[in-house]
Picture 1: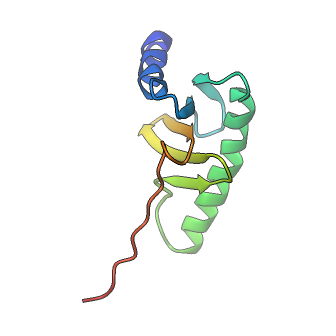
Picture 2: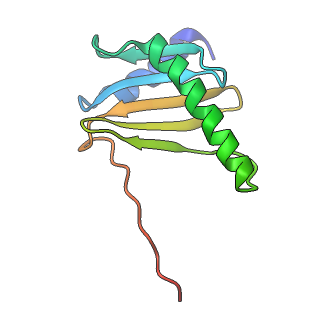
Length: 110
């Protein structure tokens, strides 16, 4: 994908005012493309994602799993979602809790 196509894809996420940042990040933590509020340093966020991914990989290995697919974080005023976009990129969304909902359901046994 061209840089313009990537930015166009990120712009679709950013149309919602509650999404404060949308990034494409490599598995090594390099920013490929990003769109964010001025208060969010996209390069710094991308670099931090690399460490988070490393922790996720170690945890997956410890639990005898092949890989980490999605990572989510609920912070005080923001939620963060890290998801695979294609084989070479991750999508990182940062948004307000009312916009980026990270819901979980615990299902009881039958």
